Image 1: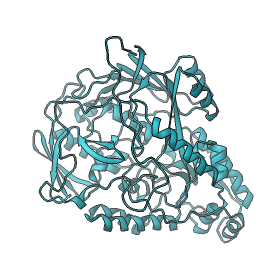
Image 2: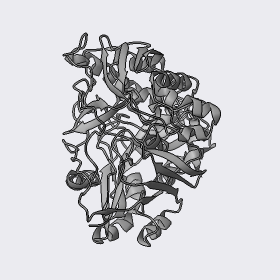
Image 3: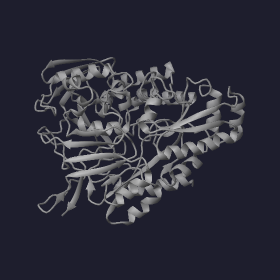
Length: 564
């Protein structure tokens, strides 16, 4: 059995018990969890086959994984229990802006911040491995054809600046997103042709076409409802204002962002008063600061340091397998990397086991198929063969390509990606390809490779994927913010546009299967590994939601018990 399979079996045993930090339960607010969490067969015009697919539907099984998600436990209660008022989190990513309508505000860490400040219309919940939608700013909703969606909104919600939330704010949010091409907000709201305020607390969304995946877009952090008046008055700090459990109280570009609890929050109140997420680029410094008590939780520590934290009762560690597929993106507009023979040469030159071992050690899993889909993304096609490591065949394809000894750039960001890129550089050299590794911070990388005009040639990066197969349009459609490969296959795009309009799940599955085969044939992306990441935190820290299927870590209810 390969090393990756042995590691997977070990990690899954851990994750079944500890894949989440303890989190607060309950939906909060006065509204019950409505039976209309998603349009169902009991509603006019809806049918069981029209329900959004579960993360496990279609395409056979994904790589081995827990069949159920760990349950959330509430924070401890009692008069003798004391909680920290402030939590300091160290991150391996920097924030250049806090603006969900900016291309620079596109990415996973930015959306973690968006989740803190902005509420979405709906929430996505995971129970026993099944996904369902629950009310948030929308109390309930209805549709008859998946093209017109009517949402009935809460009437007791206020923005941080005191403005009352109404249907007009949804209309304004859709309009502002439509004016922000290059942002993930634009990519997710693009399915809505028009938002109409029918009443103060009723909004109608008219979609461009029927879309059974629409709620898988609306729950996303980049679809949070904004306050247009605040943004128009102050284009920078207006994005600090939302209806969420926190507002931004302090922000230092590329250094830190501090969140202050909204004590008038309409839903479940967070325990922690303030949170600061601090960018510490040096990985060993994060370990030292956590050990010294300068921080309460840290992301992305050296893998060699985790045994020390695991053995210390003053700390807790939490491993989780990422849904995202990490690998090599090749710019389809570049005269060299756009050549199919060159891309095949790279694909056959790649030794995934070597890259994974050197870059991640035991914290990586080599895929067993060639799909670019996420591990748990619906309708993953597991029958697509993985291109094997074959240096001789790589040299044959290289000889047939347009490559003529030029030095190419491998662009990347993040310590693990840098190590992987350096190994890739060596592997390409073995077949005769010259390259250099260009290391950027995450914000610079996102700007440099934005899908409006990506300047990368070869990029080592992680596809940001959730359970929604429609998210692939945000990564590989022309003009999409995260289309770093500048991929443009009208047939592929048409399939992604067609699939959500199909109410029959088997027919929808067939289209998504074919789409994956098409992109695997075109090869703008070469999957290399799935990451297993691990958080280290002080014992007593809980409330961070780490799902088996979601892309974004949810820190809204994070707490730290300091006594009791």
